[in-house]
Length: 286
Image (tube, rainbow, N blue to C red):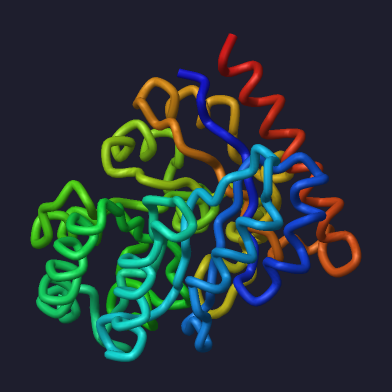
């Protein structure tokens, strides 16, 4: 218990320039992530330069993220395979991604393709000693019409882990996307802790007065993503549950979403979240 580290998510194309600031700010880990494509990134070269900057600091790379649609696009699936097979270059054993989707189709319609693709990916992960974590963002899709990620809610998770029964396939969990579905993240975490392989530090505020007046459909803007400490979740309790469940990796703060701490204030918000989560960790570990 008490081994959870606090880190941040760093864009792959910015890591070399941002990493010194991240180290100086006191972050303990990073997730190196890419959206949709690796854009020709050579992990051999990037890992060497990254490790040179990290040097003798205590910072580690906790995970590699490639948030893409491996069910729909073969190129994206191949790049995800590349991440799995080369994560060791960054000395990490976690790869975060989306579950993919057949665009415009339902979760049910996508499930046979998920079984085929992630059945193979899970075997590749096992061979590489890596665990795959499905990030739980709906990506503006819903049950009957998905965009790129069917892995956004517990009913889908039950189906996913039924068709691909592997200890090398789990969840990259965060509370914000569950709050916006009106799911209690605390109770969910207690249930799903055995499948959680990585945690993102992002929260949300739900505007219940807005929902009472306008509802939650038709583009209603009732959920605002915030840094941990500024949203509706109890992170001290989250860390306690993670501790009790034997989770001992990190919480990687996912920035670039907060409406207040953004732009020139992005790092200010990240550091506030870092210090808040460190304080929650201290209290949870008492």
